[in-house]
Length: 316
Ligand code: NAD
Ligand code: UDP
Image 1 (cartoon, rainbow, N blue to C red):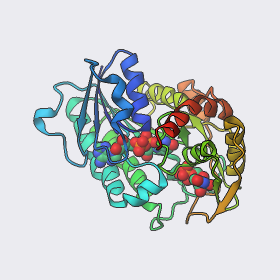
Image 2 (cartoon, rainbow, N blue to C red):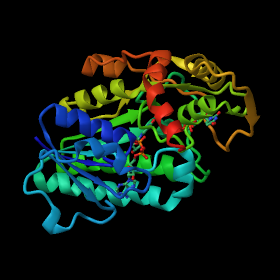
Image 3 (cartoon, rainbow, N blue to C red):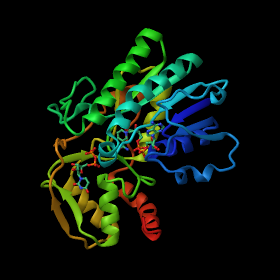
């Protein structure tokens, strides 16, 4: 298949590129490099089935660059870590709205399938636990995180409208916290922050009392879930995440064990509207996609250790 991936130079986009090339497809990676990095794709240099285009998807692709034939569009472009989407608030709203519509229109023109990377943030600070796809969420529409949450919620509505009104073959994945090699070492997410701090022997920064929970999914599991969803006939949102739920304190403890670090904990203020708990109900993914995660937290951290150590070595 001829596949376009937006956000290809990012953490998840680069892993998806690897997987789809490995499966024999041709990939056009599109990315404006706002939070991504070409280093993530450097190993595909010289690969004839891969082409990269530096482009902001808030502009339609230039006509001369548009592929003649497209079978599938994976739309992953968006800042994703809280510090990055707070810094790039307007860009985040624009890529979720204008950028997503540009890519939907492209998919429609080519009769291509379309998968959009949505998020557990659609549930906000959830009042239903664990979160099922039919829960509508508890989101502050004007809080600091709203630039991300509302962009993603708007994008879901736009995707469903292209499905219902324009018959585009769309898919929506609600991704729960995913980690692994190529997670940017300084983008501020909890696993990258704590891994780098542990390896440097610095105190691990715990926001609030550390009793808030998250459910962490290893990147290989997530990519497998996305690929299965793209091939399915499920058009409503599907949670993909690991239902094993950890407090941030438990996550810090796991990181200390895996790195062998003696770092202490340093408690810092909780960011505004930081969700108190997160856990995906994956009944739907199990039933519709035959998918469930294979890699548990400590194993996934151990499989990421080499990458974070390599970043430490180059002084990131
Ligand atoms: P990332 O920041 O590593 O990758 C996002 C990529 O999108 C970057 O390479 C960035 O340069 C690119 N991008 C941003 N705006 C763009 C624009 N206007 N035009 C073209 N490219 C643009 O983040 P990630 O963790 O790989 O996340 C990928 C997608 O998955 C995002 O949509 C994110 O919201 C979603 N997601 C990720 C997680 C997670 O835990 N990693 C959780 C939920 C949802
Ligand atoms: N967090 C933390 N220390 C850090 C970074 C994050 O305690 O150095 C907390 C953050 O407040 C949140 C959780 O870890 O409760 C997950 O944060 P992350 O930025 O990874 O993503 P989120 O799930 O909030 O989007």
